[in-house]
Length: 53
Image (cartoon, rainbow, N blue to C red; front, side, top):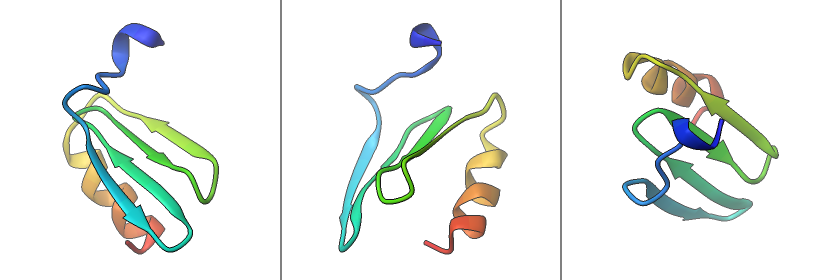
């Protein structure tokens, strides 16, 4: 799992309820304490719509 997540190139957004970290192949929502790891870049957009951010 460690090899799949590239934190150095991730975008970090500070929101009211916590951090939202968006990487090439993962999304971490601190407020919901949820980590999504995916292998298709299009999945990021679908997950962001699901989270309503």
